[in-house]
Amino acid sequence: MTRTVYVNGEYLPETEAKVSIFDRGFLFADAVYEVTSVLDGKLIDFEGHAVRLKRSLDELEMAEPCNKDELLEIHRKLVELNGIEEGLVYLQVSRGSDGDRDFVFPPADTQPSLVLFTQNKPGLADSPAAQKGAKIISIDDIRWGRRDIKTVQLLYPSMGKMMAKKAGCDDAWLVEDGYVTEGTSNNAYFVKNGKIVTRPLSNDILHGITRKAVLRMAAEAQMEIEERLFTIDEAKKADEAFTTSASAFVMPVVEIDGVALGDGTPGPIAKRLREIYLDESRKAAI
Image (cartoon, rainbow, N blue to C red):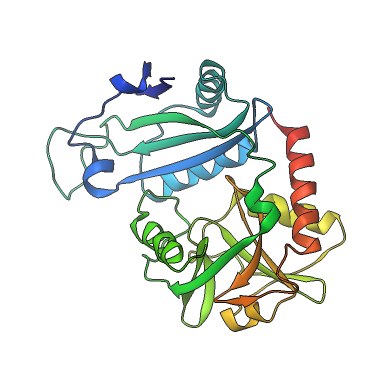
């Protein structure tokens, strides 16, 4: 089935969608993005994603292509047109094109490009991967310094996932100056003696929307949380670990660099947080 996508004001079959070859997202990765999950045909934490999108645009001095209400309408219409019950809506804003290639930003009144499409993911909430847990490797973090801005500069995270795949694992955690920053496309946590440990917010990591929600829910459930730097060796000695992201929610981690955590199966805190997150997010979906 051909998807209906959104490109700069038009709903089109994906086979007819196009942007300029001079678009700065294509030439310079001069673009930001968001991914919003869909459960039961409704959007999960749309408000959080819209707020972070505006922050990313502001940090790059990029114009907003439309307002939040218009974005919500586009999301909802794409979900409806494509019959998405469980899946994702991908949104990308680039600085647009002024008809040529130049390192200097185009004039301020250049129209940004806005592209959205859906991905149908039946069984997203009941993922078999979450039931068995993820195996990860650690790799050096050589990305640029502003990981708090959700740009489309994802080559190294993509390479990291391929490194993990070649090692027979599922994902990689990135390490800089001896400390874990985050996963290739998620925030990272470990649990020791019942305490959840994760790196504090800074320019070094993405300010995860799911991270924020999960930490709030963990606090409400009277779970102990410590935000601090931690090493990969600390994580290897943990009782359990997990990651959070909009597309995988709470994903248990069962092995780090070949070292099994606990009994090598998803831990109780990760499983409980996943249950709480899915339940609360479904209630609040729009």
